[in-house]
Length: 205
Picture (cartoon, rainbow, N blue to C red):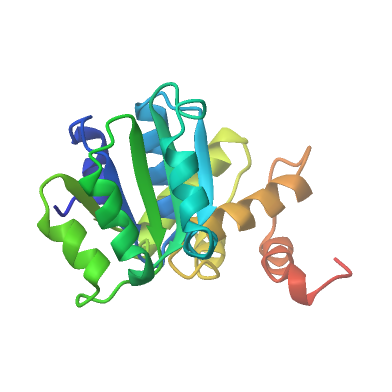
């Protein structure tokens, strides 16, 4: 079933399979962390899809091992594509009760078998992560500067947001650079911000 990103906390706890897809890596990472926190699950395992496909038997052995999974655990599968479709079907048919599968995919077309499966089945959750709007990124930046007590104009916030391509992960990286640079500063200029957000092109700054 299709779930909006802001509805994640409202879903029932018995769901075991989640598909996060889209370009917004920052939002995907945030939602996955949010889901792990909701389940109070500090014990999780990360796999690359390629790693699973090349070692399918080892993957299933690890998944089904009682020594590894003494309680509920989460498996995060990064770079998921339609290639892993049959493995997901296999896991569903095994009716595993103590494992949650969190799939992190890039953009999936509407005709994608994986996306169709997760959108259609009521016991599966499909969450699209669309690019953040400038307004959302601007609000996140404002909250950030309030917390670190640095005075900054809306014009400079707009300048930072313009470099982020609609992804809060990029915004976080830019804000962390500014935070490190502005230690013991109470304000930061447009010129300083401009140089910082173009730091990869200006190694002398």
